[in-house]
Image (cartoon, rainbow, N blue to C red; front, side, top):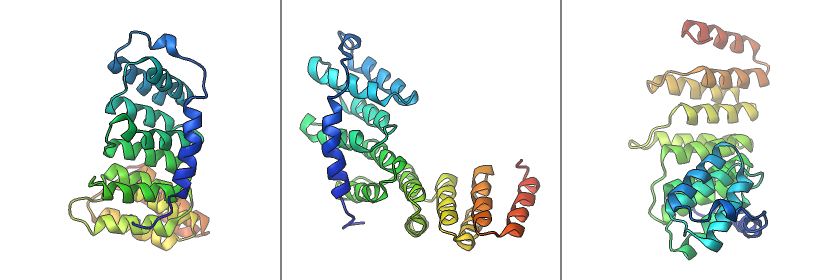
Amino acid sequence: TPGWPIRAQQGAASSGSEQLGRHGSIAPLVGGASVQRCTIALRAFAGSRAWSHAVALFAAMERTGPRPDLACCNAAIAACARAPSPAPALALLRSMPSRRLNPDVISYNATITACGRTRFWEAAMGLVSEMTQRGLAASITTYGAVVSACERASQWAVAVSLLEAMLARDALKPNLLVYSAAIAACGKGQQWQRALGLLASAAASELRPDIITLNCAIGACGRASEWQRSMQLVEDMSAWGLE
């Protein structure tokens, strides 16, 4: 969506550049290692939420080698998505052209996830617009990350509009993750009727709601004190074999 504010991205990326070189040396782990082995290590840091170690490793690679490639940079961004701020992930994304690397869908998805986890939903939306400008097609994962960002920031209207935009496209249909995040966003906005409408839409699209989706709908009704509807959904869980 052209025009979304990007100042949040720029400010976060600036502070992130400082953070990239602030952590202690991890150079002893890099010496003589291949870029592939460093990438594996970065992915392990992402899985263990050790984002600061990933930052240190990436900085050590820049100083002593090996030179990071696209997969390595994407792994570092994914690790930084666990940081308490999107700054490190945004800084890495913005530095890729200077490394002669072209960000791909994976690069953007990881950065959008970083923005979403810290409620920088406008920055996440801006990255989707940037992807379009670069000729990169947003994937289901992209939309899932942005809708989740809107849910965390209690932006239910934006979350619903994104889901509806997906429904209007034949090539890209929302999955249960997207539906669940949009339903949860509606719950935070006291929009229980919209939440139930989305649940019905998921069922009509031949997606079988799972326990996460139904729990989001139950929560939406509960927030609005629609207890009878919540209990009906609980009964539906039993009927569908979900406990």
